[in-house]
Image (cartoon, rainbow, N blue to C red; front, side, top):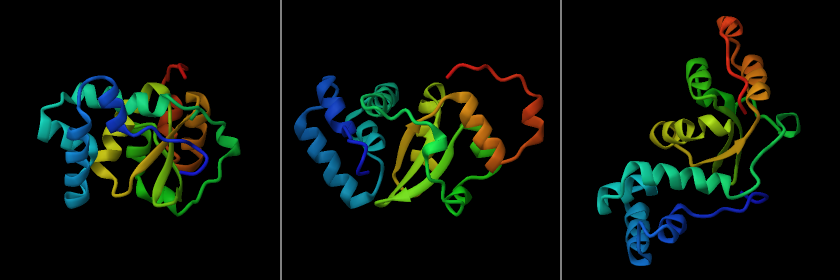
Amino acid sequence: MGQYPKMRIGQLLVRSGALTEQQVADILTEQDRSGRPFGDLAERLFGISPDIVEQAWIDQYMAFDTCVDLDTQRIDVEVLKVLNRRQAWQFRLLPLRQENGELIAATTRDKLARAVNFAWRRLHDPVFFLIAQRPQLEDFLMEHYPWPAMEEVELPLAG
């Protein structure tokens, strides 16, 4: 995505000592062949712990200024169709738009790991996550995925 620089998950796993440069190259070759997510292949091919992969995903998104004010984001209503209401609320995930072959979506810092896991396993396109404050994200979810019962649930206000 143009305006948000990316640190590749492979670079993070090399930096942490979990993988070597050669292992990353092997994973990328297999990823080109199979289309499987990088983290999944790191786990399958080299026995990397899912917890280490998950932490690398989180580090990938938190390494850059990905915090956003949703009022400034363009939302393509057609993209909202990639999730149903239950998925959007369960993972606190708001699809925003497609850009350069990626789905741009917002979640909260505390739900990032769950949203990443869901996206890698269930969505067809690569996903780039932006981090929103929880109260604002829930307001947007209520607007785009209305669920009146959610208004009655006591939700913590942690960002």
